[in-house]
Length: 434
Image 1 (cartoon, rainbow, N blue to C red):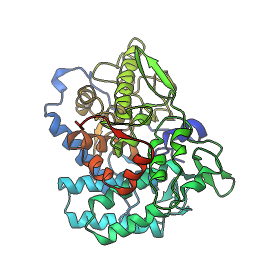
Image 2: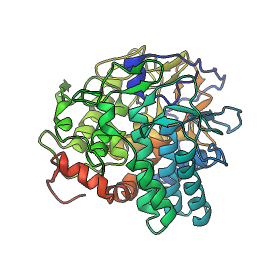
Image 3: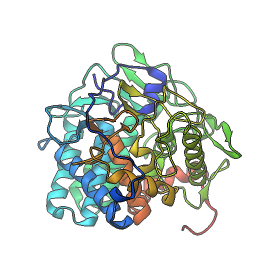
Image 4: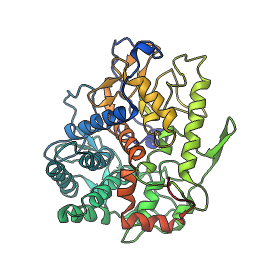
């Protein structure tokens, strides 16, 4: 069973199987060797990243359903057949970005969006509007007896609403997207509690773990509070905790989780110039990214590959399987591995620092493939992951686009349901958006 596209929170709190990643013998050059440095402009690299990511979401979706694989080989050649609803949600957003940038004819992209939405309604197995984490990409049927996932359903819905708002002049897309979003029974997922359950299985019922402290959870509560039918009560926004953490003089809201927890909701929700009663979450993620870079650099004596332009550890494949790792504080068996989506997914928060890492990795043999950066690699032992993971490709693409144009933020935030959720949570403007 692959955990390539499991939400990282589930790996941390629910456990699961590990997928041993095959090792490649590609020898990596000295990363600081100026002769091998990427010579293009930042804008050229950003476009290369987005084009490669779009290619993943186009090619690794089953052409008769639109469901996107949770992982694929960096070469693009494999017979893997498992999709995830999260990867499909990122994929719907990627299709909208691709249309805005002219990566394929609009008619082709519209048809793929319609197909994906129709397949989600008709084929993707679920219950009470929520969807199973992993499905067969051809049939949409549940794979591996996985859970009905609240967070992965939310990631799908973010893509669904982005597609509806982008193709607002297409009646069929609007109707399909609204129906998918409208049938989610958010209150059911509370299971009598103040916070959302992480999921449900028909064999055993609701999972014990709940979304009860700060992480990538914000999208779920905001979508739930913005629902047209039986929305979550506003009290659920206050029900989850916001513990703070201080590292090297930097204090921010965090629960000691991997860096991706500061990225995912903000791929779609624009928290710039906004705050609720507790924080400006965009600035909080800026601080978290700064702390993470300092943390990686603090490991340099033990792992000499980490440098000012080569850092980033977040949940990913490793040489020995899927790992939920990162820091601060240190978590997981850190071994010098670099995870490109750590910097890629934070490029909208700390552009110059993250872009330096993306530029440095671009010219390393084996690290860049058909779909952009590999999921993970370790310069200390020349290990390069042969796979990419859909949500890791996705978070990098979306955040690069948000830095360039704010397209995803602008499109998604135009949704009435999103605006309703933000209002229910008590968000207000603090200054003009930059």
